[in-house]
Image (cartoon, rainbow, N blue to C red; front, side):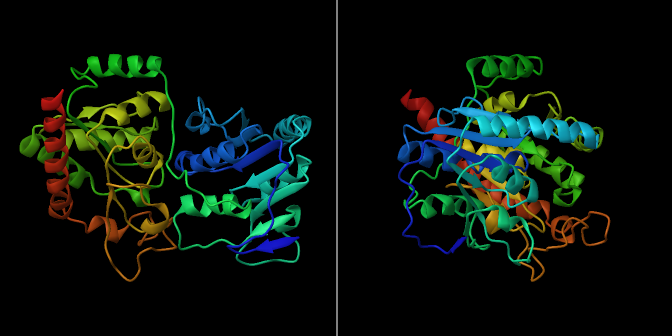
Length: 373
């Protein structure tokens, strides 16, 4: 087994079938998209497939750099789960992959990569090499750099193949039908995709990432009063998330638009692509907004901003510069109940001071564009 650092003299030059595996969440899949651009550029005739968790595949559909999209669906019934995994393994073996790039660094990804039958299976070297572990299922291991952004982390795979990654932009795709459907939903709220609006994503299941309800409500009011811009609130279709957004609406005097749980992921992409600005937490929608080139103001608590911040130019992360940030016990929060002091103590004034120059620049650019048109 080869264990490699940042340099390699090994080049795969006869690759016909490539499988990329990423078993994580929406945002994790979004930040893999530069890999597919690079693979398509360097192996234009290769068959490129992606294998992702069910529920995240919308981030890769319509992608011209991917020939086949495979989905892993998990089942609580162990017998049914085993049967389905056998079916997936059969599909993988029939596709005769030469090369597997496993980006997830987990057991299932390593196992399915191994069972695909590919002669070359590349994964990331674990921080601690146990005698018997998933690293044994790879033919080659790459040494990661935990201090670099996750996009650069993924692109180490391309460097390993012998190329300098140049196509680093995120890329997501949707259809005209998705735009039309989104426009119809907005129309019911007396809004249009052509209006000036800000999208705010305040909450997801990982509660430790969410700022305060009163803070979000105050920002909605600030955007309406100071800039005459409406706020559209989004969240997942979960009772606790929708309840959280309901509280923001109730506390706000500006009547922000509540679209929580009402948009498909493709419709959300259409919405984000037309937004003036995205405000929110470290989440899939944050990465989606960055991918469609919408400016992002991200409110971070205990997460690692340098690894998981919005990718690209023109984005800002608001975060406390405390010694305990980032916090690696973040799932439990400061009080063991999911709350984060580094988030709770961020003031409305701190957020508004970041939004002020952002909004001035965005509105100025829109006015300039409108006058030229």
